[in-house]
Amino acid sequence: MNNNHYEITVIYNGILEDDQVKPYVDQTVEMIARHGGTIKSTDVWGRRRLAYPIDKKNNGYYIQFTVEAPGDMVHHLERFFHIEENVMRHLILQFSERDLKRREEAKEKHAAAAAAEAAARAAEEAAAASNDVDDED
Amino acid sequence: MNPRFNNRRDQNNADAALRQQKRAEPPRRRRNPLKGIEYIDYTNTKLLLRFTNDQGKILPKRITGLTATQQRALTRAVKYARHLALLPFVTDDAR
Image 1: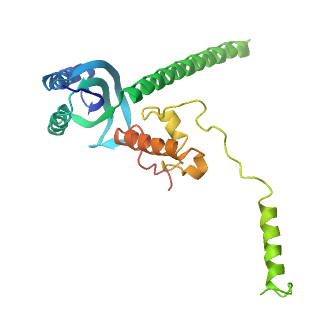
Image 2: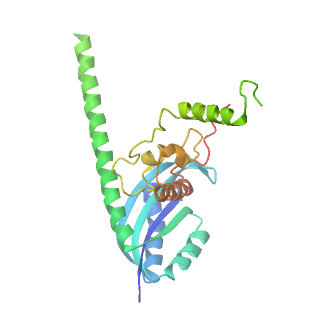
Image 3: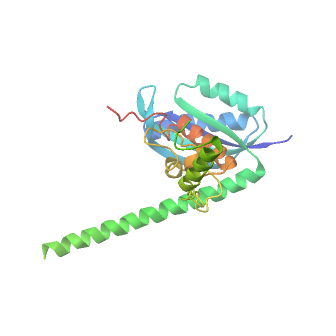
């Protein structure tokens, strides 16, 4: 059967503690597998603050799967997400082989840039700290 | 009709000259607003924020300087990001 590439992002209820989310994530993974999908990669973003409240909640637990699956998995999964109360939001995107590659590259660059920025900030803070010490002298 | 001119042709010419003058400064266009980013990723909120205004609205192509294709990709990316609460639909800071 012809499989497509999907990127599935799910936001679980932010009220759940990190260890409480696990069964729901497993359930989703199970759901994907049952409908003929194979998970290529799992990207756990963890708890994040939402840009606006969803269902009166300000936090969500984000997880992103890259999946190879037949097209009819999508509506099964959509249905499951709608019924499952602890899934606040989900987004299923289909990518062509070419887009997937470009996307991977973009992601890597994005991650590298974020890492570089974090490093720069750390260095800056370290410099600021040493400056503070100088001031005391 | 403006009494300063004897006929319409003179006035038209004067108007054209004025328009020319106004256009003397060429419209500035940012050369590459994406700075080497060839794919607009909807999870890259930092990038997307550059193309939205303070209210969270997507800026027009006229201001972003993106090509039509890039602008479409941007619009889509912003909308996905909003759906996942990575970007706000509205920022209501105005009191």
